Image (cartoon, rainbow, N blue to C red):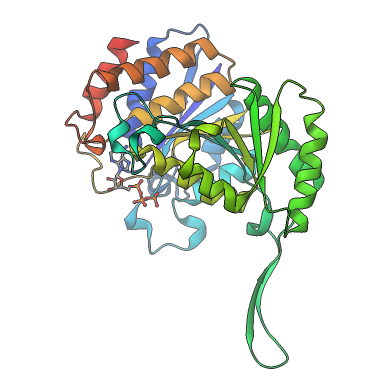
Length: 347
Ligand code: ATP
């Protein structure tokens, strides 16, 4: 079991260090951690945000634990040399096509949500977003019409194999949860969505235990704030998923608690907190490492098949929060290392 650890910039190294301590504390036989440089730090050392050596480490590993990239001092660089290219490059090179974002409200943190507490308390869902297709990657341009008006255009499309593989990822995720999957589209208006829906229905035949439903994206946006407890797993395309996953995250309350996974075909995946490099607090020992620790739990679950260990880490984080140990992002005063120590003690 080889895990590549790419800590990156800003608070990346601080939060990753705590997640690594948690992984090491599990004393998993055969676990090997290999570090690599990504982002601004990699640019300064190797002249590229995703150096060949790092990509090599990624390819030789079973999964990647990723911190954060982003560095203001790189703002003047050409786009392909900016820190953010590290994550885009890894997605492309490793074929990471499914983004998984769990959102749940931890007991004791109900007051952080902008929703009514009793509504927020019901949130325990997973958004599965397709990452490589849709209108983001279609042909696009700005053209001048015959009458002289400028027109922007972007082509939306999904091929059936692209829908099929994300549908499988979502059904498989649903099988590990409460076996309910809601596919979100706009099939009343978009042909792309009609094909999406048809293919998801075909794939559903292979997962008879999973209860499949369909919802239009406008309704899904409304239901996410009205009655979020109705959802278990949501699967959707790149554009709708971009918006809904941020919406679901913020219903929960804090950025320092939210983990994510980007999966390739098979069990390979990259796991990272949804927050960025947070340059405003970097190096001060203030960052909440819980999102990265929870990302490590997702890594154990999805790439290494270690469900029991993943649950153990999640329970230790929940207990830490329930005991009132909170970072500044949650209105508490615990520092990065203190939170790491507290999670370890409860593990
Ligand atoms: P990016 O564009 O990379 O997402 P950003 O600046 O928009 O960067 P973040 O880096 O995630 O977003 O930071 C947003 C705010 O949240 C900042 O004020 C930051 O200090 C805070 N923040 C982010 N992550 C954490 C964390 N783990 N613990 C505490 N505060 C955090």
